[in-house]
Image (cartoon, rainbow, N blue to C red; front, side, top):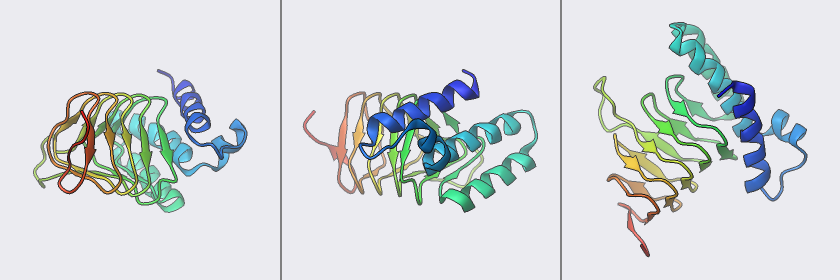
Amino acid sequence: MKSFQCTKEDVLAAKKFDPAAPCCMMIYFTYPGVIALRRHRRAHKLWNKGFKNWARIISYKTRKKTGIDIHPAARIGHGVFIDHGMGLVIGETASVGDNCVLYHGVTLGANTFDKVDRHPKLGNGVIVYAGATIIGPIHIGDNSIIAANAVVLKEAPANSRLIGVPAHKNGN
């Protein structure tokens, strides 16, 4: 999918999930999550073409501007909404599916320093509420919900509801 189309879907996701969202133009220019995703897509293209230093510079400047830290190698789908975003971290081998919603303080982190697949993979339609931490190379199934401040250390099938520290299923 083209970057412009992805950005358009991100803006529409912000409009859908944020009841305080103004017009699409204001979302495009002022929402930190939309700005971070737009810049990440540029950095990701550069990373994949071997321009890793330039990708890192874009990532660094984005983190300074928005408080959102997305590694340029991370794979992110379209129609993603990062609400507020401050303190959000997405690691190098992480992936975020289409139509996901991530709130501030979310971490998609590693459980090793080894150069292996070490970050979570979120399916499509996953919602991760504020302060939640998902650690390691685990898969979170489509349409799952991770509660605020949950710490997820194990895989979860589609349509899971995870709460607590460590996270456990709730009401499935």
